[in-house]
Image (cartoon, rainbow, N blue to C red; front, top):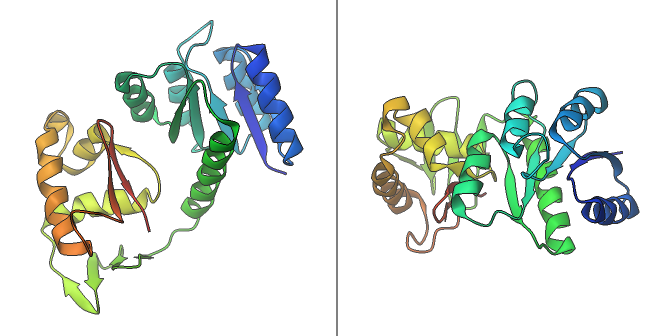
Length: 225
């Protein structure tokens, strides 16, 4: 049975989530503050965490940082903070997805299923990533499209590799810049636009309507098969 840890200080939200998730076969753990959440995660080993950022004892991003110190459990943030700054901070801290309150239960359940699927995929280290348009050999560091090898510059490859290894997961602008260019370049967001446009021209069937290299405006990028 899949175990979900719900972290929220609003009893009505915890109750609604417990009812809906239990009805769909999930096992539920709950916590109403950050300290309890970290303890529950360590003791209960949940398969997924649903986390509110506005907790009474600490900010939710501190809970994310605490979890990411030892586990890759999927974390879906559920918060009333609608601004992009709060979303980016949570994603940079290590969250996998972000849903703004108020939310639809069907959308939340779909996001949870997607996060669990991505987590299962990450457990299998696949040397070749295949999309409908091209394939990426992560071992040989080569890309083929229509049976022909596509030449990528080292920087283009670096971007593609980071995104492909995070298949389906949002990679923030800061994370991508840090991993490809280094710590001194985390504000140079124009680099991303330039190199992503180059990758799309080389790999996307219709570069102006990308299927695989997706932009999440103001936040980052997502690789989709």
